[in-house]
Image 1 (cartoon, helix red, strand yellow):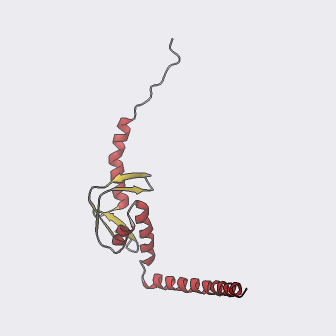
Image 2 (spheres, one colour; image 1 turned 120 degrees about the horizontal axis):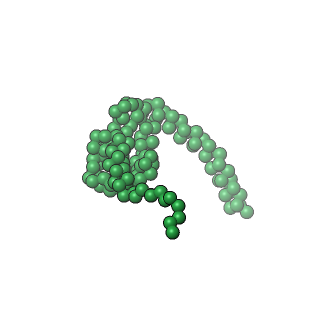
Image 3 (cartoon, one colour; image 1 turned 90 degrees about the vertical axis):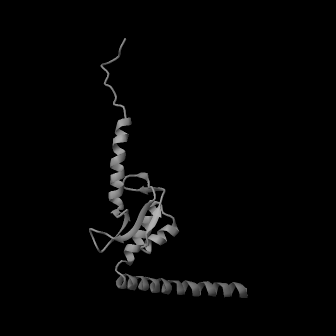
Length: 141
């Protein structure tokens, strides 16, 4: 009974401390956003790099704004397709169009433009392989 009472008391104390910790962490995050304007962009960029196909260690290298040379397949949600890279140089830098944001660059180009180029190169090969259907004039006997 004594142990059970002690256990309940400890759980109640932790439940009381939890909202205080959450408020403290929220205030720290708000200060970090104010002091470091690109802080939130770094968080978004981390999620984006993981979604594209980089591993956590590679993402950490990119987020620290160091160049990364990578050869594998990358996925972009916009095209719903994977594209193979051949030892390309990747880096996170300020977006050339909007300096208040970050962009993932491949060989100096934003990743969106790089994927569009790859997709446009792939598109003609897809169209050539498709055979047009012939219209029939009815049932032949």
